[in-house]
Picture 1 (cartoon, rainbow, N blue to C red):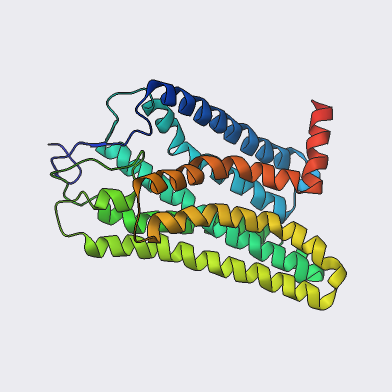
Picture 2: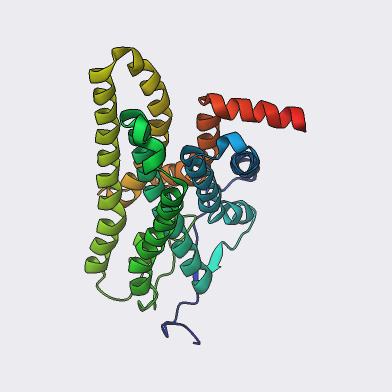
Length: 305
């Protein structure tokens, strides 16, 4: 076989979400509507931030990048998922499987770092308002976004270089509707325990550690605000609650998918759908409906249109 790793497996079998034609139709409608919502909602935020001069600040530049990443993350799996709903032979080629895994972890890694950067941005704006524009200047903002992309690529490559060279010579059923490192590694014709631990540490433990770090960070910000002025506490809580909601929606599925020791196919599918479909469509709603500047920009855009 003309393979990258000279293995016998040239394709992997994906898991279908439904057996009955009626359920497939409902899932097609559900995923199609949500994916259209993901495209329109996230692109709307990106374009609004680009064309509205009032939103050319670090917070909204980071928000636009987050929307772009959400759209990219969803696009790694949802189009293929919709296509496979009415395909009897749900297979993906070896190379396409590798590409899908790589970009899932690039976009996931970038989003993880962006959420940290957004937490730092809010900390600076709330706890050090007089120094905010000095610290979060345009150069620093661009540098942090570039750093997020670099770390995302490193995060994906650190796992990809091992998986691409594994020997696959037997079972090829991934056991899910998309390819991911933990599932593909288990299909290798060798003892993969050490590599599974590397993936768990790289994706799972880092996700869990980052989640707890962000949670503590937001609590620290609220405590700091309360010490200085109890009147500003409700305003700060209102602002941070949107960020914390996004953090929970992103990290909860990641922690389950990569750390939970007793995975089941039903819960695995549920959290994967939350990660790739639900969260990317909710993030635009969370940030626009709870942000005064975004509401004003949206009304201005509607009036202009």
